[in-house]
Length: 116
Image (cartoon, rainbow, N blue to C red):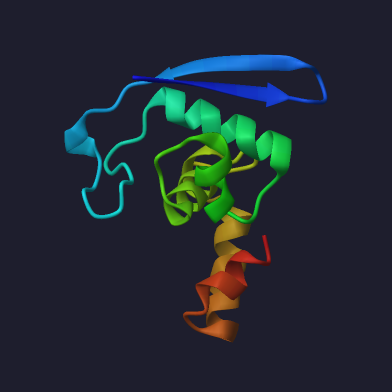
């Protein structure tokens, strides 16, 4: 078990988190944790991004104590933790826009997503 202290210089609040991991969860070659994320890891990542902002994902592991690679942190943030992440079905208007954009752009999904 490891204890990580996250400090927020703006509010002078510290968050202390205990992280438990077994040797089975850690990749022997890279030393990085694999598999499902724990709520504690999510909290560390959220606090880190709130303090430092998005980007430079490789520094997250070095500066936060998470045993996750930068790519894993980026994907976890983008697909699960981002505050403005919209989940659920498309509205009728959104569906119409998607169909129109697909007719115009083809399978360029990233370019279509930029329209939203």
